[in-house]
Image 1 (tube, rainbow over the protein chains, first blue to last red):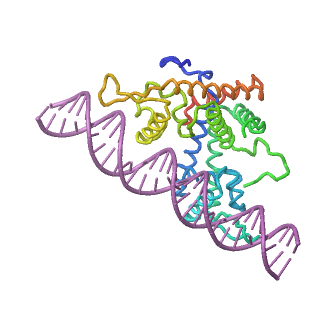
Image 2 (image 1 turned 60 degrees about the vertical axis):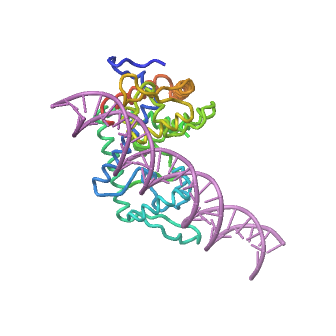
Image 3 (image 1 turned 90 degrees about the horizontal axis):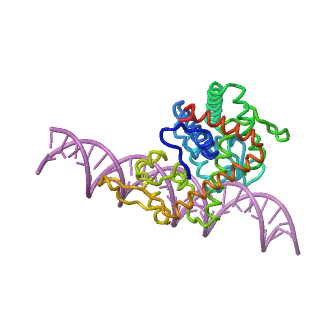
Length: 153
Length: 153
DNA sequence: ACTCCGAGTAAACCGTGTTTACTATCATCT
DNA sequence: AGATGATAGTAAACACGGTTTACTCGGAGT
C-alpha cells in the first residue's frame, strides 16, 4: 500500500473512484438537508431523503416506495408516519383497492420537494461555474453512462 | 415539475447530479462490503467502512479518526471496540502521551484493508471496460477537479 | 499542590433499521 | 356463497449506531 506523502500534492491517481463519488454525494446530501431546514422545512433528516428523491412519493403506495428505497415496508411505514406527523404528506385509502393506501404530498410536502430540486439545480449551477459548462455536461454524461450500464445495481 | 413519461427513454437531462453520484456511490459501498464478507472478512458492516477508507486508521488516534469520519469520539470509540472485537485492530497506549491511544491494524485488519482496495481497483477495471480507458480517466479527472475545488466540503 | 484542559471512555437516550406477528382485503377454487 | 391462500399495510420487539451527558485520568500552567 503506497500513501502519498504529506507534502506532495494529491493527484487524481491517488484517489479511488469510491472516494471520488462518495465525498461529493455526501456533501450534496448534507447541503440539501441544511438548505431545506434553513428554508423553514424543519424536522427533515437524512433518512427522509429516501422519499424526497426522484420521482418523489406523490401518488405512490407505501410498498412501492419501500422497494424503491431499498428498505422494508415497515421501515418505510415509519418514515411515512414521521413525515405525516411533520405535515409533509398524508396517507389515504386507495379508491380502487381496499387494502391499498396512497401517499399524497401536502402543500408543504410539494413545497419541500420543489425546494430540494431547486437546491440541486443550484448545486449544478455551482459545479457548472467551477468546471465550465462543457466539462460539467461531460461529467453528467459519463455518470449517466455508468448509470445506464447496470454496473451499478 | 416535469416527469419523464413511462415509455420515453430516460436521458441525461432527466437526472440530477445528486442521483448520478449517489446511486453508484451506494452500489460501490454494497459491493465492497459484500466482497469483503465473501472473502472471509465477516462481520464488517457499512458503518465500519468509515474506518476502511483512505488512508485507513493504522497508527492514528481515536479522536482524529472521529473527526475524519465526521462522527463523535464516542461513536468512533464504539466502532473501534466493535472492530477490535472482530479482530481487525487493537488499541494500545501511545508511547509518548499517557492519555492518548493508538489504533493499530492487526494482520487481519491489514488484509481486509488491502482487500477493500483490491475490490475498488476491480470496480475501476470494470468501469474502465465499460466507458473505455479514455473516458474513465476523464471521469476521474472531472470528479477530482470537483474534489479539489472545495465545492464539496 | 491546585486548577484547568483535553483524550478517551461509559451510560442513557433516540432514531431507524430488521424480524416477527397480526389484520384486512382481494383472488381463486370448490 | 364459503373456504383458502396471497398480498398491502401495520404494529411490536429487538438490534444497532448515532448523539448528549457525564466521568476518569494524564499533562500543562500557575
